[in-house]
Image (cartoon, rainbow, N blue to C red):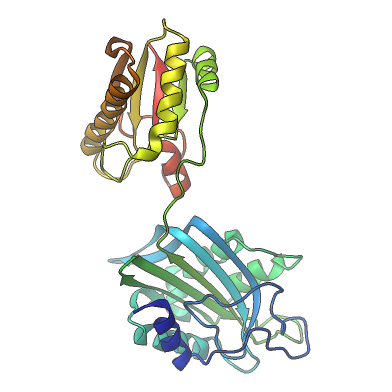
Length: 333
């Protein structure tokens, strides 16, 4: 099912409201410049309070593994929307609409909870922090509602659903709660957080380190971490977009003929240690081979080593940290 078909299925059950639908009041006009995500409509009569998108980012979503509730860190194009529902509509009523629409569109429920189960699973405490940390184009002075509304109880509902397609898997999470302690205008209205992670490719080759910087770091620190050498997941074949970094590594070695180095491969902590150790060694050897065959660097000046995830430079608890740990280093011998 393509995006337009999916949106049509959602619109059939969650009546699509025109952007900018307004009544009188602070929370009844869409945030300037914002619009619904093309994949999922708003609940009819809702207004767009905050919005924000990232071409490539990461976002946590909840999954239930046996009796444990765990965070699954997802990467891709991240889209965030925050809506105020219309007056007189409960959190549960809005939640039921989204459940029905997503089922009709072929989404599979990964984890969901309603007020009592959410409280038992401590779901709400996690979500309130995610809403705060999400990318928003314009938060203005309204941080109060990003924090307190989702922290207060009751009337909280959550859903994480996913759908596989030709281009990969789409993940979507929805959290909502009625603002029972709000001001006169928004009191009782439902604040809805919708976050979508779609498949996306990282634009590689945007960062480079020149030969002078490499040489200076090796003299100063005895090592340098390089992030311009690219491999596919669990593979040791160097991707073509690594050419710029390899060229600068070779130039640094030619600039200092007496310099001999270890080429050291590092991984994150995903997978088994023995597999990561073998993979990091193969990747380091691939770099040594490329410097020798393509750039005529004498083999005796280079030695490949792999250390798996034994020397992280950041926490492996987040994707950002794992990305920093996946690297190739030049180390002075």
